[in-house]
Amino acid sequence: GQQVMQIPQYQHVQEGEDFTTYCNSSTTLSNIQWYKQRPGGHPVFLIQLVKSGEVKKQKRLTFQFGEAKKNSSLHITATQTTDVGTYFCAGPGSGNTGKLIFGQGTTLQVKP
Amino acid sequence: KAGVTQTPRYLIKTRGQQVTLSCSPISGHRSVSWYQQTPGQGLQFLFEYFSETQRNKGNFPGRFSGRQFSNSRSEMNVSTLELGDSALYLCASSLAGGEKLFFGSGTQLSVL
Image (cartoon, rainbow over all chains, first blue to last red; front, side):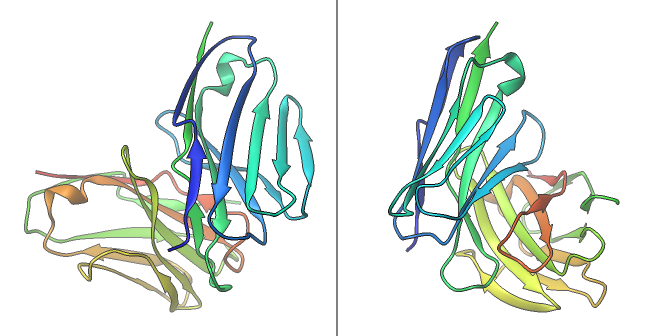
């Protein structure tokens, strides 16, 4: 079945270092979404990418959607302790039925 | 605008019992999705409802069921609970499904 994979599963960085998480889908996606879940919290929507090769920035966060619309990445420049959490990518399931398939997530720990 | 509300926040049940979880979506949202989150499995899609109709179902046994009411509120039921059902159950709403999801705080279910 359709799968969305994320790597790495965990990442520990020193505050100020950069961080990147990668997302790969087994099928072409019409769009990809990114969510952040803080420890003890619930996932919160960050962004949606729709176009092939699209790049969007939110302050220190840069999101990319691959040319083939099967992969995506999230890059954080100069991490801060507030970036701690788990980052999920998600893509629509087959058919237009409101199903989102989530990657396993990348948990980011930032050492001050 | 009130967010997605899930009740109860915590539940402790024993094996063999059944449980009903409730979700009130954001006003105006007609799509409600349910996800199971466990540390090892990430966010697993359970089902999605739109205008009282189940549009999609994940790979869960028939013990997991749900419904949506005319006011878009949704409930999910798990019968004959098993230890492996212990998880955080998240409800998410969106306008029509497939776009930006708004998650509730979840119901933490522990099966003893």
